[in-house]
Structures are given as structure tokens and as C-alpha cells.
Image (tube, one colour):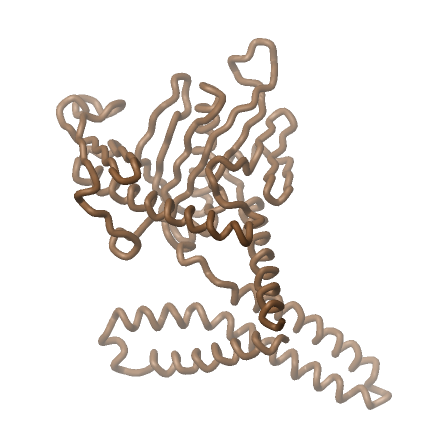
Length: 365
């Protein structure tokens, strides 16, 4: 094990023992905020320390096996034990390196999912509707909640644009690599000659911002307009100006929300979406600067970047960032995204590990 890794793990072990003492103190529960913070830190460190202790046990097992090698009668057994201990230690070291990778502070946040039809007209809007259903089914499989924020229906079905809030545990962690261009290749229902058409949609996954902690929006820099909601809603839509449109004047970002009958709730939702878009804008600007020195294998998350192709005639889905093709398009469109999301997360981790190794090499030089 690398000395730097061993030192960090020893420090975490000491910190865990310290946390055990602090959480066991009688007065800690008097300050609930501090108690929650300590409990959260304990929950993050404990699994890593458990892995490290397993590794240390493997090291002891390996040393014991080495001691037995001098006994001719035990040599064969000791050799097998040493190989098993070495293999176990290597696997645990790999797990420890992954567990110690920097965590995305947004991983546990809820998200705003935005899907917009692109090239392809009505066919693109229909595909946007299918993408929204795909993510809604994936949310259902993960026991997440989907709250519709706003929608602009297509002329023949689907959506020109749809925005939803997805609420649950680890939502951003599993959906953060979905941002980008999604291309579909198939024969549209309106195509009389059976020709394959190519259409596209863009998907944006924005971690829900904390308006207090993440960003401050100057009230003088926004314009708020109210208007009557359109679409379903019966007589209500003709009687009250419940829909809200917020324009952020410095950036020109416009957010509309009309799904709720309450103007107050629509305004709160629109402000939340605006805050998330502004935070995402800042994040994208940072990533563009960082890309000059290191480009992520997973991509920048740029909305214009084509990340995936859904080919219906061949029944395949291809993610171009990791060159992964799966011949299970029906299952994927029904929300079975687990293989895709796990492969993307693993590739990202591998890139982080490679970058970490490169940084350590530079430090040695």
C-alpha cells in the first residue's frame, strides 16, 4: 500500500475513534446540529475504516503464512494462504482507493430534469416524451418522486419542453451523466415510405440549489410576471393569474412555472429552478476553464454534446462517451438504466483514479 494512502487511512481510523467518543458523550445531544454533523461524518468514515481493518487483517494473515513457509510440512498450505491473503489485500486496496475518491457534494441532492426537443420537429417532440417516460420509470424503480414543474406539449404528442423535479436518495449521483444530446434513429409513424429518420433532444440534469447556501439572487436583477395558466385545469385557468414567469436580467434566463394552482407555490418553484440554472451556469463555466488542462472521459455535460444514440431498427443503445452498446432498447426505454448509469460511474471513477495517480507522480518528481 502506498505510504500516502496508509497515512490517510490511519488518520481516518483515529478520527473514527474520536467520533465514537464524542457521540457517546452525554452532552452532545443537547446540540442537535452538531450531533447530526458528527453522525453524518461517522457514517461516511466507518465503512472506509472497516475496509482498512480488513486489509490490516489480510496483512497479518500474509505475515503468518510467510512464517509457516520455513516448515516443510506446512509449505504448500502456507503458500496457498499467502497467495489468498495477497489477492484479498489487493482487492481491498482497490476498494479503499475508490472509497477515498473526492465526493461530489451534489450527489445526494434532488434534481431538476429538463428535456427539450431539438432537430426533427414532431418526431423529436415524440422522442422527448419517451425520454421523459424513461426517466420517470427509472425514478419509479429507484423509489423516487417525480414532480412536474412545466410542460409544453408537442403538436402530435410528446413535449417541445418538459421540466420536472426528481426527489429521492442519491438522485444526482445516478442521473448526473445524462446531460447532453440524445439522438434517436427510427422510422416515424408519419413516414409512409419506411425511411429511417434521425432526430435529437437535449437533456439537462441540474442539482437542486440551496438558495441560501449556493447562490444569492439580487431581487433588483429579476423581473416577475404573472399570467393565466394554459392547458388543463378547467375553469380555474381562466379565472386566476397563477402562472409565474421569472426573468433573470443579467443572464437573460427565463423560467416559467404554471403546474400548480397557487401563484405562491409556482413562484417558489420557479425561483428554485432559476437558482439551480444559475449554479449550473457557474459550474459549466468552471468546467470549461478546467477542460483546458484536463478533459473528462465522461464529457463536459455540454447540452450540445451528443452523448447517446437510440437505434430502434437495430434495437441498440450506444453511449458514445464510453463506447458501450447495449442491445436492450425496449428495457432501457422502460426505465432500466442501471447498466448504463453504473458503467458511466465506474468509468468516471477510473478516470479519477488515473488522475490521482498522475498527480502523485508529478508530486514525486
